[in-house]
Image (cartoon, rainbow, N blue to C red):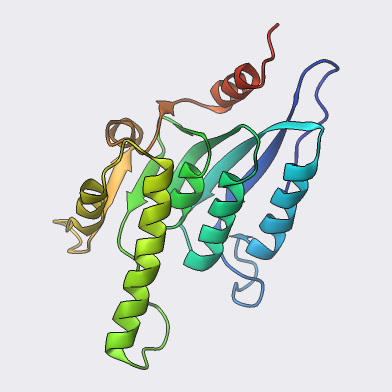
Length: 209
């Protein structure tokens, strides 16, 4: 989970957490599907939180989303690390991966990256239509509250509008945002790459050359 090399002496140690592939549990994800597993991610994040040698954490995101509860658990863990964090969306942060990306203190996006905001979709067996709709809405509200808690410049009405906007080509609800668009909407902070994220975190932990 943490593939960070040991930095040169005197430079603060920044840990790296990759969020790549589908977010799914061990027993659900087919192999060899690339996945981020909450069972692995959550203990790793805990270890970073209690490691005194870790000064800050970089979250590298490239994910189409996946299990909402699992993704939200990862997002809450990142948000509560108690250390400076920065995320970098390298190509895609779609669906629940959006919540993981915005869990960091600062959100960077690569120039070609995108964020897809859309309403939750039910993929399980529907036993009771009304109960299923109620469950989906409750889960959607939890995700929205988290995103709005982390991105204070984003208003609830605007988030719902982006999520429910119907695509003219596909007929499906949702909005695909490029990096500059995500910044204008208050979802991301800056366009950049790994070097920019590292420099930002080093500055925030007090490192100067």
